[in-house]
Image 1 (cartoon, chains in turn orange, purple):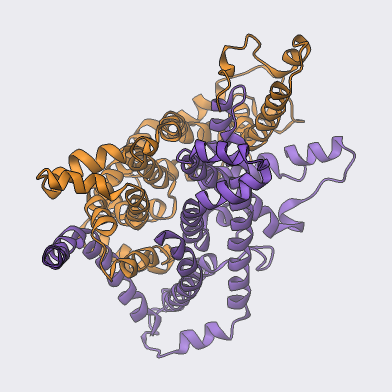
Image 2: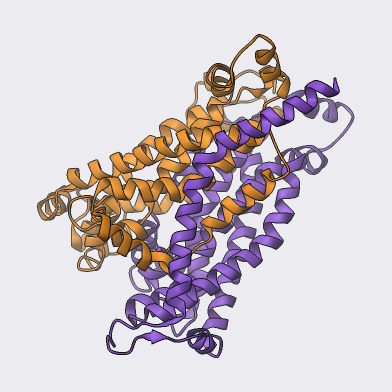
Length: 295
Length: 296
């Protein structure tokens, strides 16, 4: 679109804008309509999260009373929740495991996706589909063997053990996503690098990675989120030492199920780090794809 | 010319092998060891509650499962769940991606809000929906229905599977939106502009330019979602525990019931093998279809 940026408009919300503009040109009314629609849909989608955060600041009595936006906020629930289990220990485990497994998965997947995208053989497609099929194993079907193996090698309830599981769990998806992003890159660019005498390693490091950085970032983001939110393996393979935030929230869900304010406070703390991280990175991601420049 | 091409191929083959080796061998181990053990257990009489009764069972576990009506019901539930959520998220995600691609006031913030549910843990979102949204007495939805003069719905007892579908779709719609919005960035503005000059309306532009452009991204969304939806567990575990009856028991949950509630490792492993076979049948049809789009 070639129209001027709407950001410089003085009015902040849609209502007064309509009244204040006497010249109701078609473009502006269309934009207004879009803004109303976009904001309503976004509001409806976000509402449950908003409501959960709000409930965390209510008293238990107010939490189950008739839904209301007006109440006197209190931090009691947060204090009670922190008094029962140390949030920071769980959060640290989540951070280490989610980022560690993502880094490991990216390191293993980049060479693989590179060769699939740029040096395809007859078996490439089959390998890709086979990788995906490993993801279709329902975790519960293989829990017993994995549990027994982990017990025997001493990986139960360790960050290392959980990191290994998450790395392998996300590897097929990471390979797939990187493959599709790499395939979008025109081959000529790498060809040109090769002509200039770049080795495979240099080609990947100096050409491929910088050019596909937004794609790699979105893949990494996805992997971090999936690891952060994974509940099945973390509940079954950890108990106290390496338990991440999913275990933390599970410890509140059953006994505190009827205490909505405390449950909301614990939930808010469990999702806050990843939510903020997601907000920050998605902006880069959605804004940043620069393939247009090389096409 | 021919010389370089042929030599390039052998070098390429070697390089391919060394580059793919770590990912392929790790995944192979990750798959084959538990799979072999699962297949082995599935042929055993192995119930943790009956330590005396062990031994080779042959196909007994499978025979029992296949004559169990719960298996067929669970398969149906699995397919319904996957199908509906895919339809809702892909259609909704595409429309929302088009909407959030338009410029409007505060678009960035609206985008962030709409994408947020994907960052929420499945356990948390299930708990929030169950307690604060869909609760028959104190939930927001029943309050909303009452203020509009409608009867309140007891979501999890009268519409159990629909409730689960709503919760899961709420989680995955933002994922589809995020991926499709990212893919939209590489849409050629000049092409859209040229089409508009030629008199194409917004609907025509959507069907003939936007949608074909998004084809590959949509394929990726379908594939990734399908993998996760086939093994949905936490949402069911937290909200309905598979009930009422078997109404919301999918295959993953049925295996869980057998393995961890009935302590029947043999039966659960047989269920696992069936789930793997089913997943691969679905995969052959769907993934193959979708993979075609990736070639272009």
